[in-house]
Image 1: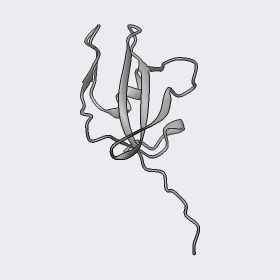
Image 2 (image 1 turned 90 degrees about the horizontal axis):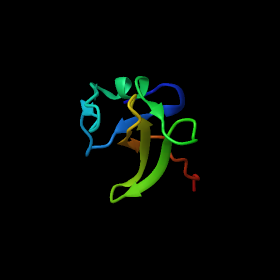
Image 3 (image 1 turned 180 degrees about the vertical axis):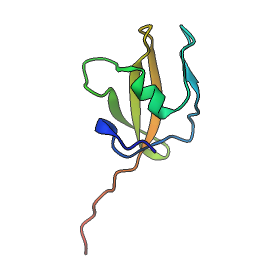
Image 4 (image 1 turned 90 degrees about the vertical axis):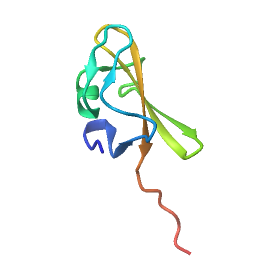
Length: 87
């Protein structure tokens, strides 16, 4: 689980595995921390994170640029607690 900075409490989605490699330059990121430390957010959003959904519910997509400029994508499960009214 990643618990730093903007990234909050994110678990790597079950479909993901590390190490993750760039298809263009073959740079390898051994774990989630190395992935975020050694890549930059893609696009104009400060973190590169976007909310999406799949068959399992809400997921978080992390779009990050490798040093070579290629965009990489990693999926996370959003583990933030959802508050429900007490009845």
